[in-house]
Image (tube, rainbow over all chains, first blue to last red; front, side):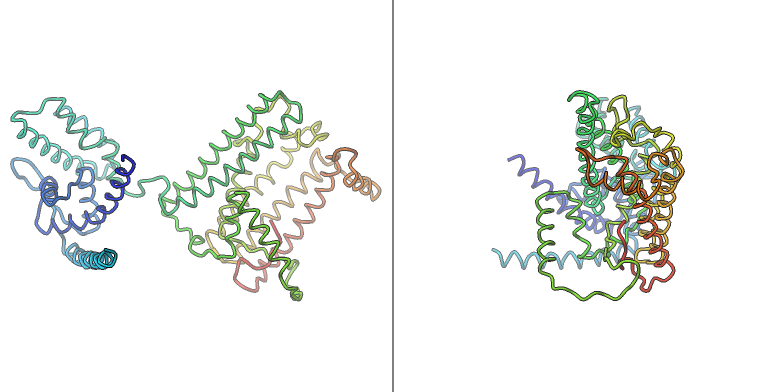
Length: 113
Length: 381
């Protein structure tokens, strides 16, 4: 069923897209650089392409939700990201929304199953 | 590292200068991390092919760089796309209709055989389609890039929506709509006459699609007039754009065009100006009326110039009342075919009077618009 598989993949990606931002913000409560952040997300079951993650980090920083700093580690300069105070507030609001959506969906599923 | 450097240089070339070094440094760190992880798995340094595989996994340089772009990442965004698609579909359908006319005209004039007529129609269709789609795409790109807010898209009214049915040019819903309108008109109660409110009582609301129609029609006319758009391209030695006028083909049409070139160009650009005015100040009755007044005055200028001050003048001049009567009789009793001279000779005074009427109407509206609405009574275009 290649067409069904393609459709599933497309819908799955759409479903994940918004939640990845939430996961990145939550994971950056602890300072990390891109590579270790990607590994941490993969360990959580959220694989993310570098070509998606790195531009996303820059965008979130431009929006004031992250702060970054270049530092040397293991004889190489790396850019470390962490959540800004504005990012903390935004994450809290987004988590509330996430829980609300989750509760609504749970209610719908309970009624339909 | 040559491969990595070449890859990063290809990305850097696509990036804005202000952020280039910073982004490339971060990407370099990410790639080196990947290669180190790969070396740990292999137990040795990856060879050139393996490095290249890792770079391919990161993504094509154009794709990677595009993700760092600021501003829109698409030519036509999802919000604008339905409007873009609608305009392109309507324009292409009209272009096909024009090409069909080209086909019939070329055949009817005996300019060539069937293959020649088909080739002329096909070339006209392709030229027109490419130009129209290109213009629509450029307009969409400008709207997306500069984030132009099209206010009329948020302030549409249900009573303006029939224009969407008409421009969709789908015959069945169109016929259905016309029948519904005819039914509604015949079933409508007779209403008392309204008090006099100006030179015309006909209501013709200016719908939300109208600014785009004004701009599109003005742009197409301008491009055709200055020779950048061809509807009758490749149709033989005689110029079919003049051939449709029958006996008038013997006139020096280049001289006629030269005589009216400036007024027609100003008229076409004024149409674009009306659309722009409607976008700029939607709902502003006086701005709209002033813009329409300008269009009507330019039309008067163009018609007057062609009628009274061009090589056409001698061909269509009506000497006296008797001559006028002859032409009217020619018009109503064609001996097997319509007489182009009669049609054109009568069209000029009629069009001139029509534009004069519009000019007076819009002058009155511009000076004494009683309500700040664009949709009040108005004579047609």
